[in-house]
Image (tube, rainbow, N blue to C red; front, side):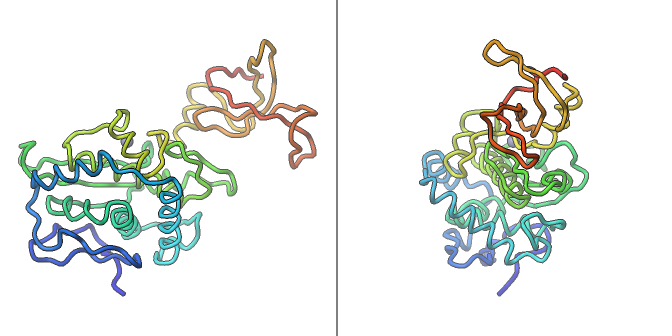
Length: 294
Ligand SMILES: [Zn+2]
């Protein structure tokens, strides 16, 4: 069985075969053979499809799970869900699997016809991923070069402590590989928007519609760790701190258990769930700006 390419994807030569993937049962590239870079008719067809297609939630979840399993099976670096090594070939393979399963393999050959490369960066410390569109001639109507990069640093900062789930793109992730998938999905949607419409923004409706219909994302933010950093730098609040907040005209005091976009506060209460320390706590989800240190 052939492996995914280790380096950045080459630009598809007119007669080159479609990229192989290791995913069993993937569909053949319907555009095998000749794709002109930036073919307006082809991009228009993709636009119609991407703008409307929907999947049942169960189908989305099962394909995402399949990619999780196949990555663990095929990768030389990702040997466990909370992996400690990741290579560019892992990202290339992952994005190909997404294209094959969710888009019938139609996106990548079209992007490759213009120019597409992938990267894993350890220098990106503030964002989990990015998709850069280059205009080599300066002409925005000419073929472009796309660059899709994930931050290994941010991935490795996530799930340092085992077992605690994290929220990425509004989805709860149980492990680092799930977080990597959510970030890759997000950046893939950026690639699709730029490829088809030559414009796009994850804070806008079209992006969010695609990310939700294809991947079940409910939030466009995936800067999980920077949220925790933000909590500390802006509000001086960290996991473990004692904090107070108002709830139904009472002031409650508890401990910060988790920080995503809101903080999870555990307040000791006999009606709460029993925790490992033997005490009972109620959970409250409180915006960071509503907390004061106790
Ligand atoms: Zn984005």
